[in-house]
Image (spheres, one colour):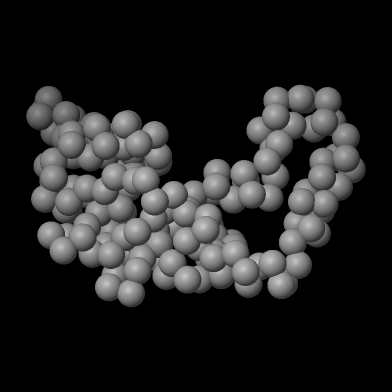
Length: 161
């Protein structure tokens, strides 16, 4: 089975010169966990994940979640979220671009790669999704670890019948 058999072809993207507000708007409007960033030639140049945004707005978020007593005081936690977002005004949102936030050290897979190759890239990259590109490195889709595992499981069930 190949990547093109299971990849998602409907992908929300942003150009590398999009503002941080554009990035946030896309994440919220489309309930994304990752967002491919493209250049003017439609080449994938980076990826922004929800973890990247957490590091920007709430750098201590995971540490706070580990402290269950902080979760008990809902007012304290809500206050923490409010403080994180109140420090960023509209002026700053326009100064920070997608290119400033994205991870440019990423792997991608070809739509003709096998699912096992995609699984290996997903594992080494430690990301839930990878961009799928054509021979010109233009974005044609996304593939996730969930889609790979589901396809491999469906294939093994079909073989056992």
